[in-house]
Length: 48
Image (cartoon, rainbow, N blue to C red; front, side):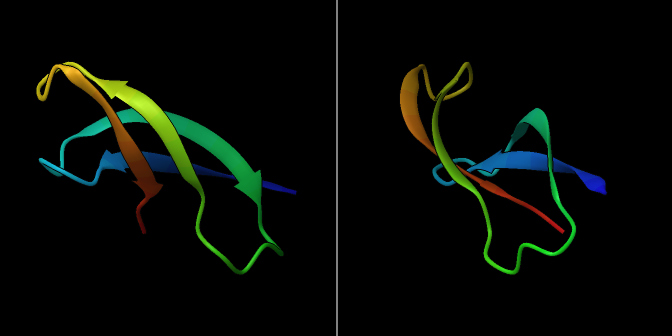
């Protein structure tokens, strides 16, 4: 079963992306994505 989560920028905190993750997964997802507000590639973490 998949759960929809939002990815927030670690620099400015804006929620730019959404993705699906497994419900049984305990750790948070960290992806390096482009933030249009910071104008740079930054780490994006999933939010609750």
